[in-house]
Image (cartoon, rainbow, N blue to C red; front, side, top):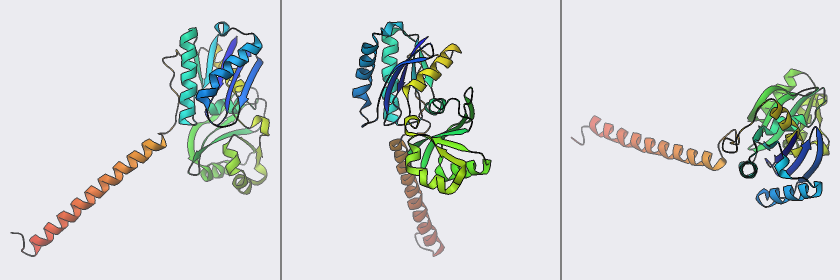
Length: 259
């Protein structure tokens, strides 16, 4: 089974080819978020070096979110374009699931974290000693609420992902000896993990057509949230103005004015 993996949910751009359980090649760049310019050239360079024909693929696994809205759209578009051109199925691999799968064999509870801004993180909880078990599905939550929840569980947790960079000191302070952090080479999203987990899903029949694939953004884009907030504030101002006018009319009537 030959699976191409694509990861672009964050700053990291990564592609990999996994064949029959072996990572044949992986190309990862963690520098600037220019995925629209880098993903396809990275794929072409990797398969050129491996002397591999993309027509021989069984499927294309794509990191499906949560994460950067732009990054997810680019990864999805790249996978869909290849899927249509090559007539290959797509495999939707949740980004946090793939991150946890990258620590396959770990006996501790795994907590991948991605920065979601405003002291929020995208996260989930997993065990992955001999298979991936989802304890808590991907969600967006306050970092303090997450660490308090984990502290109450009373078991050791391995944190990984770009969300740990900003919050590591606070996590250590809150959780003490219960927390550990993945080393640098295992701490980021990797397409090899996406492809490897994608191979598992492919064997289970969990595939999609290129037209069916949609990233899981988990929450609305910041621009959408700001627009909705602006509309809500506008309606509140309209209601406040109407209430003020109504109050004035009521006052006039009470004083015998305006009749």
